[in-house]
Every structure is written in structure tokens, then in C-alpha cells.
Length: 180
Figure 1 (cartoon, rainbow, N blue to C red):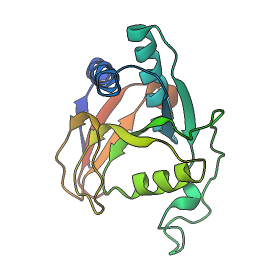
Figure 2 (tube, rainbow, N blue to C red; figure 1 turned 30 degrees about the vertical axis):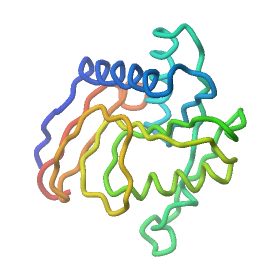
Figure 3 (cartoon, rainbow, N blue to C red; figure 1 turned 45 degrees about the vertical axis):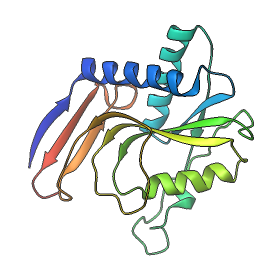
């Protein structure tokens, strides 16, 4: 297997800065806005976006964490044996809020569908938008991101590997070629 780095730490930082500006522009500021990161790396990206928004606007945006394990559509067929479940942490009411779901990679759209189901069980937001660091294509559901760090066309057999310093000791996005 071969791995090729697509984004380094500086490129990830620039992409997140751009996304933060786009979020502010699209939503005309931060009023009734919150970020909800999908476990695991989406949480780190949501926190980084909140910091950037605070630097730009001087205002704090609430950040929540969403665990979608029980909402996945592959649990019943044994694809995920003994899933590790952590709790969602939403210390605020999302009802009537403009929620930005944040994830690291958008692939088939199934994770986002599960996240929207999990989110709706927490309350009824005014609307939901999606921010992803990487959109790799190959959608199986009619889901598209509102904010994209980088479009990376891939083959279905390739794997996009996102590493973030909070979890992986470095910031990088790579494509793993070969038998995945």
C-alpha cells in the first residue's frame, strides 16, 4: 500500500479559516449559530472552527459533540461488531438554532444521514448545514456539503486518512492506495 499526502498542516489551517469565513458570510454572523462535531475528528474540527470564528468575530459559538453509533445503518448487519459508544454532548438546546454539522470526510453520505437522525432526536433546529474538511465523492444518498475544505476525487477502493494533532500527533490528509 502506498500513501500520498494531499493536505499538510498549513493547508488544513487555511481550509478551516476559509470555511469559518464562509460560515460567517452565509449565516450573516453568529446569532443562533452552533457547531456540532461528529465523533471523533469532526469534534476537533468543530472546535477549531469555533476558535477561528471567535478570532474573526470576537464572539463565541457553542460547540457540541455527536455520537452517531446507534444511528448507523450498518449495525444490524454485523458490519460493526461491538461498537464503542460514547455519549453525545450537547450542553445547549438546538431547537431553533442554525446547526453546522462538522465532519472530517464526506463519502457515501450515510454518516451524515445518521448524524441528522441523531441531531433531530435532540431537538428541532431551524436548519442544518454541513461542513467537511474533505469531500471525496461517491455519494449513495442525496447529501451535499455547504462548506468544503478540499474536494479530493478518489476511487472507491482508496481510503482518505485524516490525521489531526488532537488525536493523531500531526495534521495531515492522505490517500491510501492499494488494497484497503
